[in-house]
Amino acid sequence: MGRLRDRCFEFGDDGARAVVVGEHGTLDAATLSDAIRRRAGALRARGIRIGDRVGWLGPTDPDTIVGILAIQFAGAVAVPLCPRHTAGELQHVVDDSDCAALVAHPTLLDRVAGLGRTAWSSAELPADAAPAPACDVDDTDPALLIYTSGTTGRSKGVALPWRAVVANMTALGAAWGLGPTDRCASMLPLFHVHGLCIGVYAMLLAQATIHVHPKFDATALVADIRDHGVTVFLGVPTMYVALLEHLGRHPDDAAVLSRARLFTAGSAALAPSTLAEFEAATGHRILERYGMTETLITLSNPLHGERRAGTVGMPVDGVEVRIVGDDGGLVPAGTPGELQVRGDSLMLGYWRNPAATAAAFDDAWFRTGDVAVRDDGGRIAILGRSSTDIIKSGGFKISALEIEDALREHPEVADVAVLGLSDDRWGERVVAVIEAATAIGRSELVDALTRHVRTRLADYKCPRQWIVVDALRRNQMGKLEKARIRADVAAYVGDVDARRSHT
Ligand code: MLC
Ligand code: AMP
Image 1 (tube, rainbow, N blue to C red):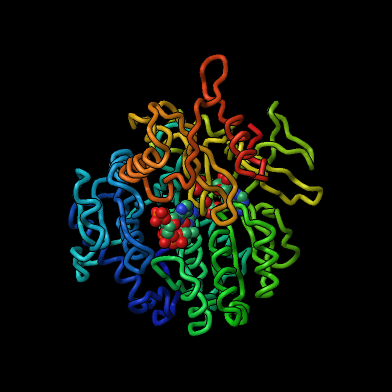
Image 2 (image 1 turned 90 degrees about the vertical axis):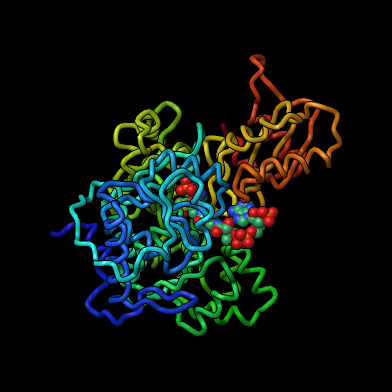
């Protein structure tokens, strides 16, 4: 049996088959394969070696798909970068991963040019370079380094081996019945596992066609289904909220959406009301699944059979899960505990961070930090997270501590607690509770802090609600009591979702 990795660079016997459809044209299998090998050749000619990390900054478009696969074909580890990040955030990722070089979409070159690394525009890499030869990379070697927020320190690089990516995406593709007749609308960012691993690798492995769009757009999705026969849509719950709003304005489009084969949701909890409204409008019961950068996609509702609202289903092939109580023992069905995952789909570890890696595992079991419960039939429901310091907004993971650190740098801030409160659109929204250092007026303070955060952090991390208090709750040791502050604020703003307060 050949290496699993090789399957990501094989696009079937029919070279004329469309593989990637972008806004400006179509790549057939033969063209995609050639473009990847030639760009890999250009990277090798510029000194990229096996095992180097190479950053990629680009939108969701065919060039990014070619670019990431070319970095990998050259034997290097792809480090997808986030275009929403500020210079400081990009610098952290590039330094931590110790990138040998950075490649950017031509319009984004200035974003990577000042990061102290060799930087190229993707347009500079000659398309007629000699193709790189296949290289010797094992399935246990890293394919990707994806940066994700945690409860400590700055974002950490998750090293995902080829084995995990290919085994898990093949299993998921089989579970969802993905195949050559599928066409997937890909509107997710390609710097996270949802858009990249499912939206690209699972589709390529299934020999499906990927219709890529630079951003989520309900009208474009309708057109994709109507005009191009798109069959599959991958969304985060916020996108389904937006799709329902679109259907409110264009009710006739519901009949078009009905023609697709499969709508999936993940990266955050899908509200049962969204599931029900989407089903009522389109006849499609969204297939919700659960995953994590560190574990890839581990639980899924079934393609055939009951997709139960509020649950994320059963383990994907190759994955085992268990639910563990505070005492470290397994809990029975019906009792909440921490969800832990073992199997093919796991990361190798956090990049060059053995302490964080050791803390994340209990033997071979990865500790997700998510609180879950199993029913008698083995279906799992995610109840929330054990840490109040992780926020999920629109499917992006955000560290409250990172925002607090940025805000504490501002002289008007005596102290701050950042929280995630439940939100109909975003799942959770970022709320900052500020203890001001001076008697500055509220609107002046909020303006100053908004400007301050925006220069330091990605747009989606910026607090959407500011609450100014005289004094933040502290315990006898003077430490902020985040869970109690959150409960106070939730009561104050009428947040009915108390799931996240169980610390
Ligand atoms: C955009 N905005 C957000 C936001 N996204 N605010 C909070 N949270 C978010 N997620 C804000 C912008 O800052 C801006 O406000 C305004 O919304 C409009 O920006 P936009 O870029 O035009 O928004 P839009 O395209 O509508 O983005 C919404 C979205 C996007 C849902 C399409 O957030 C998105 O692509 N989310 C997907 C995240 C994802 O791929 N997660 C997968 C992680 S992997 P302002 O004020 O700045 O102008 C994972 C594992 C697994 O979780 O299981 O899948
Ligand atoms: P990330 O680190 O960005 O990969 O985000 C992973 C986290 O997203 C998980 O630990 C969960 O908290 C959350 N998540 C993913 N899918 C779901 C889902 N279907 N329901 C609830 N939470 C989810």
